[in-house]
Structures are given as C-alpha cells and as structure tokens.
Length: 388
Ligand SMILES: *Cc1c(COP(=O)(O)O)cnc(C)c1O
Image (tube, rainbow, N blue to C red; front, side, top):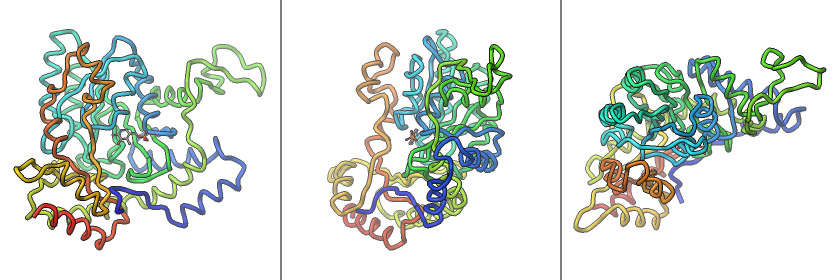
C-alpha cells in the first residue's frame, strides 16, 4: 500500500534520539528549548512553545486568550475536529464559516458577512481559527483587518503548514495573528511522533502558555504571590495541564527541522508533476492563491459525480489497487457531536454548502517527501485505469 502521507526518519534522526536516551534528561532538559529556538527562528516569531500535540497547543492557546463559557470560537468546517474541540474544552460555543471553493480555506467574504450579522445580533466571536488547509495559508491580512474591526483574536491552525509562506513571510510569523499552532504528527510536514508548537510575538501570551502546559506551576520568584521558602519551592498560580513535549521528541524535531525546506521543495516537485499528469483526466486539481507558497501537506483531487462514477467508487477502486487514499475532512458540523449542538447554535447539515460540495468530491492522493516518481506513476496509472 502506498500511503497518502508518511514520515521520513533517517539515521541522523535516530542518532539524535539515541543520544538523548543516554543523556541525563528524558524530559525538561535542553532539547525542548533548542527545538523551540529552531522553530521561532525559522518562523520569525519571538516565542515558540513546544507541547505534546497540536491539539494541546490549540487548547492552551484558547486558554491564554481567555476563551470561556459564553464565548464563541469560529472555524472552518473543513478541518480536523481538534480546531473546534479546543473551544469546547474551554466551555465556549463553536460556529463555522463556509470555505472558499478555490482554496478550501475559510471564505473571507462569508466571514465578513457572518461578522456583520453577528455584530447586529450581539454574538461576535472571541476567537477565529483560520485553518491553513493542505498547507496553503489563508488570506491572513484580510482576516486580520476583520479582527481589528470586530475585535476578535486569531489562532492560526497551521498544523499542515510549517515550511509554507504567506506574502513571503513564513507561516508562523504571527504577523497577522495572536498565535500560530503547528502539528508534528507523523503524517504532517515534519514529525516528533506526537507533538505540537505554538508561536507568538506576545510575551504575555507566551508566558501564559508556558505556565498552562506544565500544571500552572512556576519557579519564577517574580511570578509568585509570596516569598520563596527555599530552593525546593514552587507555586501553582493557575490551573494548568501536563502538555509537555519530551526530550526525545524535541531532539527528533531539531533533526527534522534541518530538512524542512527540502521536504517542502520535494512536495512541490511532486505536486507539479501531479498537476501536469492529471491535466487530461476528469478531476479537479488543487487551486493555489497567489499570496501563498503552500507547504503542500495534502494533494486533494475532486471527483465529480457522473452517471458512471462518483467519489466513493474512485476511492474504493484506488484502495483496492493498493493506493492508500484518504478523505480530508468529513465536515466538522456533520460529526454527531457537533450535529447535536447545531440547533442550539443555529447551523444544520446544509448551512455550509461549499464545504458539503467539497466533501462529496474530495480524495487525498499520496504526497510525501519520500514518495518516488515510480510510486507516483503507480498512483497515476491506477487513476487513469479507474477514470478513463
Ligand atoms: C493534525 C491536525 C490537528 C491535530 O494535531 P495533533 O498534533 O495530532 O494534535 C489539528 N488541526 C489540524 C488541521 C490537523 O490537521
């Protein structure tokens, strides 16, 4: 089976992990700060906080922005459920904004219209989570302008997008957002097995996220409410969690960061090849906006329903030929958990027509840095047999 995505782990990665195993620290040592420095430098963001997953990063990002009961978080329906769940962890409500049919990212015009209506109804969101679908940045400048006008905060879900660029700035620079979140799950651009990172330029947000990822405990005398009682002393000054990344993961992350640009370049080479070799087949290839250089986490084709075929048929035919295709994503508002919340919030199964139309047609075909041209040709040959 050729998977739709997979990690690349080489000897130098293994050596980096082995060295940590033989060292004094398996957690809370020097590797996590090294990895954070590598990512913050790469992205041009002042602070980077490593955690054990992007889901955890989204959670502490929402907590740091003081999202809570009675507040609203808006995101795209075409994302992994974690982009929405972070609001529910904080007791906040979730609503969705339909996608742009070219980029599959949150539609800025739909967002503007929904904000206008929400302002009238007194139900503006506190946080908006734009998701950089498949690695392509959302139009952050436009979303940032809306955030100024309507007073919401922005968390970029860049789980797909490390190594990508927006208006020639690295994704994660937080130039147009409060916080950006990355995932290092094995199918993503670089991996730490499980792992995530939050970047920000705001010292107070960075401080809060650092506290929240480790129980709300501080050893910094300046942050304590009363004098230290000795060298053993620490204070819990807030309710935090244990979302720490291990030293093993961070060492792998440092090692993988060295190949990030090569990975993204290779993904572009493969994607361009797909674009060209799929041009005569009845599928829609991914649209790219001119403001973005995608990290190309996913290569998504769309298969329209005809008298003789549809997405499900093509999907199953590809799987039976050993092509490990997948679908990203089942719209979040159609998940039973969110479906049940819909009537209270005001959305239903038909509220986001572009997301639904996309879902009916989307297939993610294999794309990852170590995919060979021969394997890619196998994918193309299978598609050709099925579609022509
Ligand atoms: C993978 C992913 C997440 C969650 O990442 P984890 O590191 O697995 O928690 C969140 N949002 C999106 C868009 C993702 O693709």
